[in-house]
Picture 1: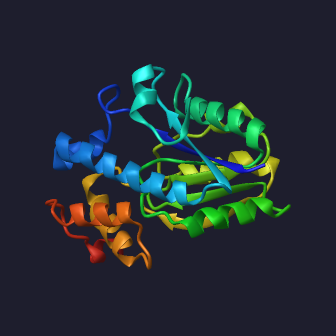
Picture 2: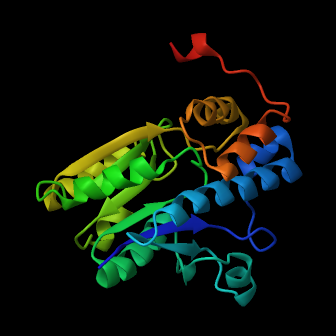
Length: 230
């Protein structure tokens, strides 16, 4: 049985996308970023076939949304807030595949090796769960190989600096949580220079990652403030 990989997406034209980023670079540029980032994420996922089965986890229950995301099987995220939707997608795929990885489309510097690392951790009897921390306190990846109660997901406060730590706390009674590498997922304009550096540091970037890196070179974004991160 292959593991599942669900990429959470919203469909442009049916739902707002990257609104905080749009405040910094404009709606058209933010949309283009989202399309390039989703394409890069999908390319990484495609290389992982057949040992991973990729899915689009689509926000909208609309035939037009399914048509907008070709290439992989799709499933609807369901209703409710993010915790409810994470539960819906994870529960469906865990019952079908056993091992499941969940991620968004806004950390396109991810690598095949990072997904392999997550599955290696899930194959370890000591770690039924794995989290990839985001630099803002959230998480860019979650993985598991056992059922997760709905309340674990719904008790977490999302888009907060303590999101990943709260998820770990909620999971603690159900098993240990392994960790994969920390990444920056792009929410606002200040994240773009970090992503540009991360893409530039990849030893073997995929074509879609190279295209995103080249596009970032054309966008007016603030330079990364190293002193601010010290």
